[in-house]
Image (cartoon, rainbow, N blue to C red; front, side):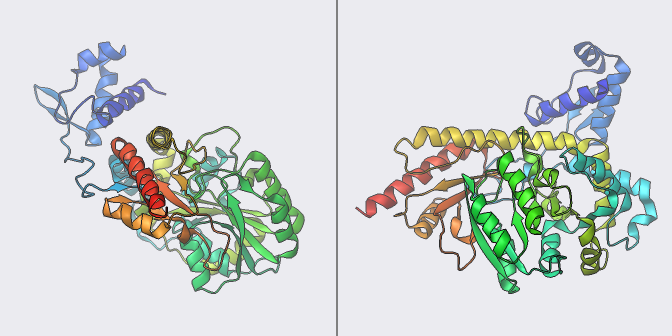
Length: 449
């Protein structure tokens, strides 16, 4: 990395962590050059870049100062709530300045082309950029097989409705699974059935039976950082799913929407083991940048491309957003932000685990080993009244989500748990929230005695 980028990253980190506070004067250019063992021109370049990102400002004959920011205390916008419910990224982590820079550069680069309708497949340069971006996750595909979508949900809806070459009609979903997609499938009366998945994994023998005899069109799965379970499949499970898909001509729709939030070894996607013929790989950028960006991508097998594009029909994602994302990824800003948000969320998961260890001495709740992603399920005793617990916690301004919403309406073998999300949970209040949850579980059980 160039020296000025090292300086840039270090000062950004110090501003973010509060080592340089709002309004504070930065070291003079000469002092910073001595501190970083570099030339004055290198420091000047770093300061100029920080100024262009509106992180610092200069006063003639005085020096450089950190831009004042409006108060963002944890209770400022949330009314004192402890939010374990929201899955949307923490607004305090949004990369506003970097992405504005990417938008400006996109406008300068593409100019009037951004205000045409564009192609249904998506901006060509973004698709080519995603070739190398996906390759880092062991997803190798030509640009022609990458289709830009209005978030992963659009791709999921198209795949549910379009015909598949295997001529089958039933969609197999994990239970529990992504609630919004389950409600969509039920509302559209699309044939769907479930297979149990727990924090320990999935029954591969049962999965093979479903693939072999169930008339399965595709299997929708979240192999990494599952919602709502938070856990990931083992390498052996991912390899087995890929093998079974090819053996029984069943497609796998791999929703890898949180791939960027972890870096454990051996977590390559199912796609990496599939030979590319039976796995559709989906990626969303909402959990890393902004939910409102509404950009995702689908990597499709050759046999599905024509039908998918016929159902998509027209360009429905902003050319400007696509161009800005292309600049954001290619410039290295995406990678830098990914590492930042991954570190922040890992810290929050760590705080959650420590709090459970500290306050769950009697073992009232059971949690899996989760160190990355957003979610940790709090498995509850069977006697606990789940809905009453959620209401009592809400009255204490602790927001949690019941497991019921993550199951098909007619699925009977439901586990009882709270889905805990750390996306918007302020680190300094995580322990308080965990303590109150365990306390309410204890009180609920005592009422039954």
